[in-house]
Length: 336
Image (cartoon, rainbow, N blue to C red; front, side):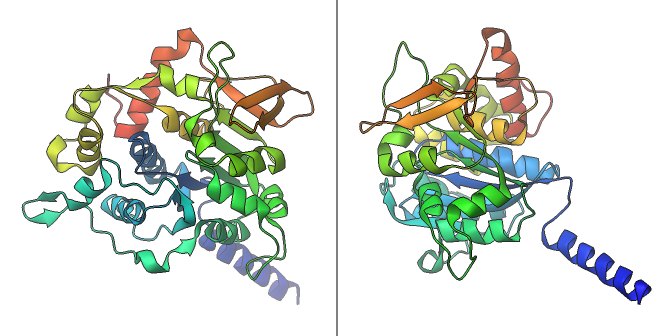
């Protein structure tokens, strides 16, 4: 009887390990408005490189931009990087529906008569973003998931507003509290001398207010002022991806704005803060609470019982931070 019980326990442990990856990797869910700014593509490449190196296990990508080309780009780009199994979710009736500059040109790009990105997803059957997140959280071990959100907070707000359903008997707040160890967000602005409502917040103010009011776990925010200091070098785009005209990241970057230009790294900072919170590159504010007012301004109030923090970049760490971001985007050590 004892032998049988031990065997059953070992089998259960093995099944659990196989179903949710290596225990040493960090399960990550990435929520993005890819298709608006180009930094989302660089942020996605960072995560795919982290996944390749077994630092994370990228469990899903959810899209907060209401554009089917965003879904196709994410699916095609993940497949280009060797991932045909990453679930993609979508914020139906979400915000920012416009194509903008690089989605269609990159999806249409060909080399030697063959498309670089070959999405196989059916945009008409993509699961609702917040439901996809609920499914991945149910599958996860307790207090294990890092949730990274770098666009309007539509999907995360809907998750936190969700009730018990066919996926889980827990509400969204309960599920996040049980399964998520960190929510890393690119949103808001915390430079008190030059305050203005930040884009990701303004695009969906109700969702942002929901997230900052209801989030039950540690919430780390990279404000506009941080990524604005760190400009991704266009020389990396031209030199670190082989023939730049044959790599979808470089093609997207060159279509977003007229080259040469160096672009802010807003979303990249939230990715690094989510995956490597202890690398010492960024400092954290004192604990507190962040509120979003009716106009989209982000207001931080210090509170020793709060679980909100915003990132701070000291001038002495500027070059170290930029080098680290470029290394992670390119997957190379000999950069800059």
